Image (cartoon, helix red, strand yellow):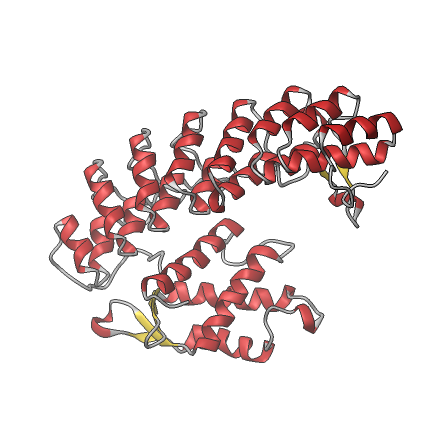
Length: 387
């Protein structure tokens, strides 16, 4: 029988006729499409008629087929998700291939509606599993800038406010690096350790001070974050503040000296877009050069898909990053002027390292840290209202 060409498609009358005619492929497609439209009664009728709860709508590539439950999750059909789970939908889902259903629901929440949040809550209530290799949902939510209501929902369903990324970075530190004062506040209110540190001993306060995230600094100070806690290299929030020109952040810490040479390693590179001037430690410039050189070695051979469109310019820039920077004013950091095209090479190399490199990354980097570096640059652009 027909499907989309009929005015009564997916009505109860249509389902009754389709069940009598017994075309399994039509019924399975109908289940998937009804789930995506949140037609709970129709979905229940089809399941009662014996249509498998794990029915999938086949795509051009068979491996990319989608189940009724996946359609319902993507469309925020919380009622249908609840029904399909009660009828065995979770057990019928493949468990070893990302993205998982909770991860899909979380992504939908970031740009979706209350219905998507209700769908995520339903999955969490039924302990829907993550796929192997996926980060904890709270970590992903912080990294993607999810609204506070989403973070609170994850915490309500048992997520730890002290959750760590796979590289050991606490969610609180990730939120501070991003300048997400709301996320920092939600985590602290839920009991997160204000002095939790990453594998380098750097705390959220240290990262916030370096990036002049004033609201984050204020929230952390009110929560009792220790300004004198030392990282592995001896850096503290106070000593880091002295190596930057961020006066407001210094005021929040009670620091009066400014712009002094810094013995500890900086974790941030300062971008001044109007002048396209980059300021940082020699080690930061070296890290950018290493990423460019690595990206040149792994970027796609096919010119159409190559991220670094001009390998010669990229190679020249890597040399400039190593040799072209000079001590800046007061000798507090080194400075290098870049063109917009050169800065694009840097961000493109970061993209290749994060998404296309099949092997180990240079300079002790991993993909999570490369993501952090890309986020830092993006924040600099946002602060200057540039896109």
